[in-house]
Length: 134
Image 1 (cartoon, rainbow, N blue to C red):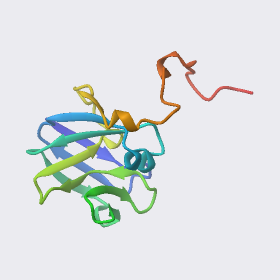
Image 2 (cartoon, rainbow, N blue to C red; image 1 turned 90 degrees about the vertical axis):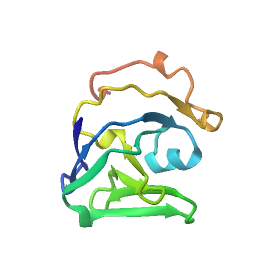
Image 3 (tube, rainbow, N blue to C red; image 1 turned 60 degrees about the vertical axis):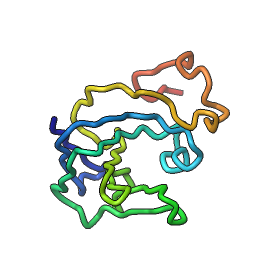
């Protein structure tokens, strides 16, 4: 399988060739802060290969307290980007930066005990096709 991806401003583009073994929604406090949302949505692969097509020099890495909580992002727009962890043995890809269709669903919620207090029954919240008026 081949996936294309990019950041919001389009400065960074990449291609991933291979399969993802896992897809998790992480509710840990660090992932919630990384995304500014209820959870991070990350794909994981021990075999897929990442190839930067443009803007690799714009991809910056933040390693929280050198503990291994790693976030890669575009230095221009701040969008989350793929990164390679565990001595090159694990590719971690934020699902939202993939432009291609992803043909797998998340396999589970991890660190669910740490979920945000407002992250309950969200499927019952009113849905809008665009920003509601007034």
